[in-house]
Image (cartoon, rainbow over all chains, first blue to last red; front, side, top):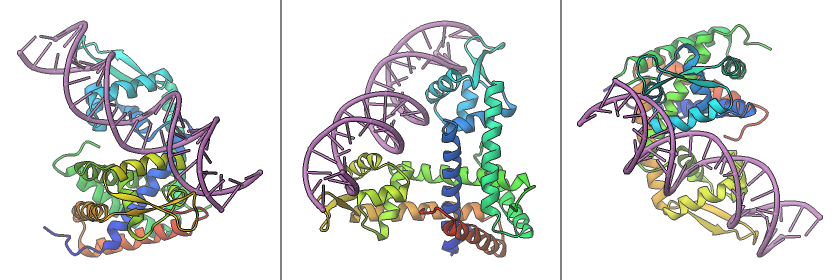
Length: 148
Length: 148
DNA sequence: TATTGTTATACTCTATAACTATA
DNA sequence: TATAGTTATAGAGTATAACAATA
């Protein structure tokens, strides 16, 4: 088990940064009357058309939580339920053009905010940071559980 | 305005990492029947005894949201309202021994999880990451608004 | 009058348990 | 029977608006 006697500054810094990022995303989402989870929903649907249960797995939520989430998004015309061709019990969830557009706007705004945050670093350091973060994220993806 | 033509991998990576960290913290907190915001509350009270309005500013919440939050924490014996000596209208919020202990346990568990995540990096790279993150966090602290 | 905090109300998000409809 | 999804219900978290008590 490596990584003992960790510099406490790293853990604190990473959490502080993650709170800042989440706060930023929440603020931007709220400016468009969305929550973070709704943004995640739209993001997942960018390149998928999953059934409710699959969506629940992606978001790590109970299926019953999905019903309301999708209801509210559907009521706003951001997603739609499409009857499954394979299974008469199920629906697939599809993002609408409106949802896709909104998702792109929010992503762009969030990216701009993050660019400001990391803008304190010179370009070469940003690249290095990107590499380190990518390694950690790759480690997450390769870990026992992982379906972010 | 610097930081244009950003590597999109950095923004995505940072958000993915922040979702992972928040998810980890939420899971650990839930194992102790707490939410992230309750953990933040206890963390803020570690070295402060603020009035409700100050606490609201720290957490970036409306004062009315604080009432319920503190109610629930108080009901569990994690914090207590102390009448303000200066102002008959107000109370100061103080963490109890029980709240402090719980907060420490959760922090330790969270730190251990983060250590695992960054454990994919060799020690020298972890140090470098710590430095980069510290610079960004310092930039946040120095920015126009900031009261994390 | 202004400020501190609570209460009333409403909505989102989440879970558990019970249910419906299809497989 | 088993599975996909919804509904019923409950509770946390949040905000806005109205209120009480104190300054």
